[in-house]
Image (cartoon, rainbow, N blue to C red; front, top):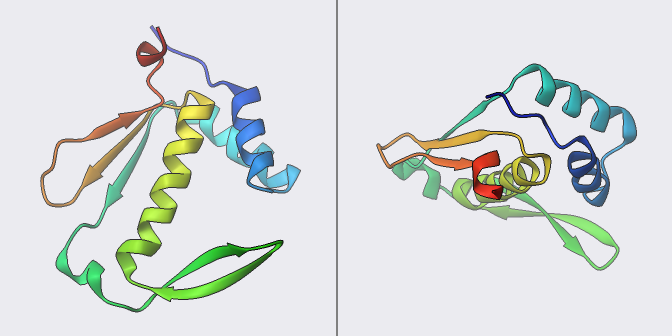
Length: 111
């Protein structure tokens, strides 16, 4: 049985992340068009290199901080997992080095 995206949950999550309305609409259209998303996560040793950048909230402002590639990627993964959960958008996260997949946004988890 196909499940439907929680459009209100998606809007709420993206609004909270301060996304512009047009970008929200595009993201939601894509969620509806693609019923499952796959995120391939690089967990190789090179992710420890200190050549990444993170956007960090500093009071009412945001700053860019240098970081490892892994810390940069973790921020992205957290956002995507939160979005998938809020939108009830089935998303499978897979690490390159053979760990078991993690599935988020599965409607059966909400039953």
